[in-house]
Amino acid sequence: MTIDTHKPGILPCQGIETLIATGAITSATPFDADQVQPASLDLRLGARGWRVRASFLPGRRLVADRIADVSMHTIDLSGGYVLEKGCVYIVELQERLALPAGLIARANPKSSTGRVDVFVRLLTDRGAVFDDVAGGYEGPLYLEIAPQTFSILVRPGTRLNQLRLKAGEPPRLETRSVGVDLMGGDIVGFRGRRHAGVVDLDHIDGHDPRDFWEPLSLRRGELLLDPGEFYILASSDDVEIPVDQAAEMTPIDPSVGEFRVHYAGFFDPGFGTDEAHGAGSKGVLEVRTHDTPFLLEHGQIVARLVYEPLTERPTRLYGEGGSHYQRQGLKLSKHFRPW
Image: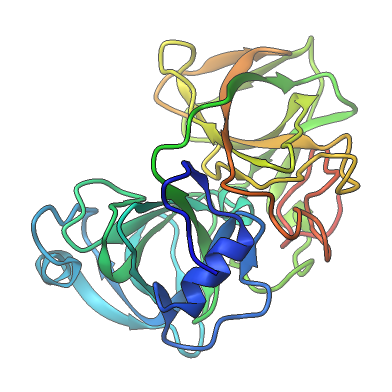
């Protein structure tokens, strides 16, 4: 199978598997069986990283050269390593790219990463921006990791972000507004506890949510967002991604509110659809305020959902084979047991 780079669109899983088979995507270790998602590829941490004193963009230089300017010390993830909140780290990823002409890539945090308030961004050699990979790029991948609310335990193979491959410039098929639900039940959201323990990102259902989260109850259909706090909320409407499309949740326009919504932006084909047995799925919103308290009202628009076409229908849909977030309502990350 070959990749048709003349048809603009996001590559489905079979296209990503072709790139792996032809050597356009390689890895330091064998790929995991579930690493390729319906329209994205999970990326895995390597063993070597650095605690750095500042974030950076490589510009015209290699990432390794820039790390030498800002590194405080090298870290070894081999036996598991705690990345502390309030600190910034750079870690090598196991995957490497040799993109053919006509293909570009874009990275985003995984849903589970955003829901524990871990800020991650992809770095490439000579990259002028975070998360975007230029066509024809050949080289290693690095991940900037900055835990905000909880310290996290990671290892080689931990998956914090994902890569979406695009042929050409896919058209925007639709942009939908996303409102927030503050009337959905006795608990309308969760706020992260500032002095909680460590979250082991490879321990599924392994943490008591009461140790990490404070539930928020309904009060006049409003929620006062405090500066510097992190919230988990749900969308007021169901989210559905057609089987021949993918979507990305984009941050809100700053003119609409003094907060940031949704670190993790990719929605794969089939999310929330009847065909994938996911009807009734909400979008979970990760909300962090800026410097000013902000009063959020029920139904208020907090984000945009941008839909783009796939180059072809994927051979599997979101949720097939199991998913922690299909048919979700207000839901914490998969690391926590049900409330």
